[in-house]
Image 1 (cartoon, rainbow, N blue to C red):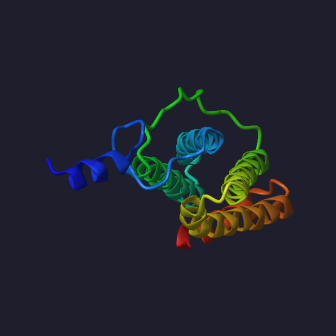
Image 2 (image 1 turned 180 degrees about the horizontal axis):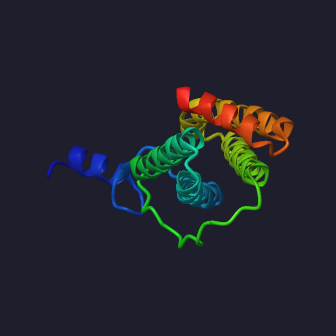
Length: 184
């Protein structure tokens, strides 16, 4: 090996996975990425559980909406895991608690879902803020489109919650909302 090749080899940073990295990740930021990944995975499982709840009640519009949300949360989890791998990290998966499977009303269920979306948004904003504070531009660029999509998702849940609240548990009104969701 020539002296120049040896010097170049010694200048390459490696992440915990042994993968070459251009910029190491801050430990605090990394912990927050792992927490957010767990939240995305939990949302995936919770939305799948909600999908089943609506399927059992023959509310196909709500069911298909939540199945799509479940799949979307899994896609987010993939993106976060792949980003961490690209940054040379070993992805650490935490155990997930069982999802909630019993609900008193559709309004309670949608309110819970809206809160979960708001928590995901807050987590993303925290990740973005930490990345910005420590000048991890790579993470900010990665997060930009995700924050935008998450904000839209939170708004969509707020809209559905408003409709469900207005329906006041009236079956005919809830069926109209279900029908609207079926069309999406």
